[in-house]
Image 1 (tube, rainbow, N blue to C red):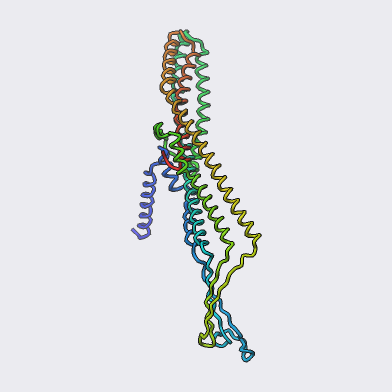
Image 2: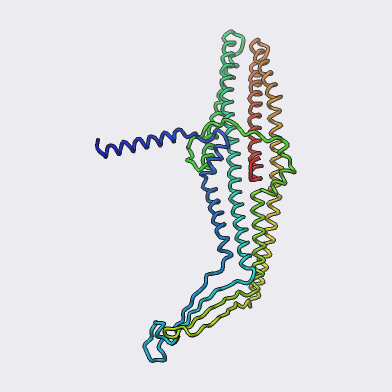
Length: 422
């Protein structure tokens, strides 16, 4: 076997191994946790916000550092009073002055710049956390809808099977002269209508699959695992409005970001007022005569803040920015707390709706259907009543599944507001 053949064979084995490992990797989608873990590692929007937060953190140290020193070289009398041709050699000119200058901002300016940069970095971290909270909330809501659609499709297929059996019963009764042909036709029409609904649900399921894959940064047509379960809802005691409101005020990414923005605006305002005072530049000046340094000078330079109109406008601007940040924080707090109250009410309603459907409506519908089926087989109930009874079963089960999905979507919204799982 030649070396080329051995190399190709080794590459083929390696590629088969890679393909086998990829095939063994489970698909995300069986639970919402699998989708969240996938998105946390691969979503580019969240990755971009994390990198921006890292970049903002790296701005803190430079913000409070001294400016770079400056070096100035001056060649004096490059013709030696006309005795020579112009030259740039320091040892041959009349004298050479080297000025080393360092600008020093007024007391407190560097600290304020550092604090502004640190608060802006906190705001960037808050925005990154908010991006993840928003992304995870959208994934949780989409997964709840994904679960609902899957269960509804399964339920519709079960009801189709049931209608097929009812059609057989109607055919048998029609063949025995105990029922009209209209009963068979009604059963067939009902099945056709449900198949049409099933097509619509499958189309919606396909669109939802594409949206979920977009959130996961996967190709739109990538398959997802069959949804197996929903997360358990927190106990009602953990959904206390007052306790959650306190947690929102202390940990909400939106409020954290607005608070950091307000503090940064306040520090920027303080820095603007500091601009009333001059910055200082110190200079150290050795003077070279031919090949030796024989004279040493010191320099002090101040910028004179004479443009008072400009500075007053900047101060008014900074005050307005502080007021805007305060108003924005208040508006955000009001909106966030209103969303919290709305979702708490929604999750309570969904929980009670599910319990009502499971404990009352569904058992009653099943009893009604069994009675209607027995009555139809004995000729005491018409086929329309039997179809109405099976519709009640389907409606009750749909209400139960819809309430479960609604509760999960509301829970995801609450966790998005909190910025953390309950």
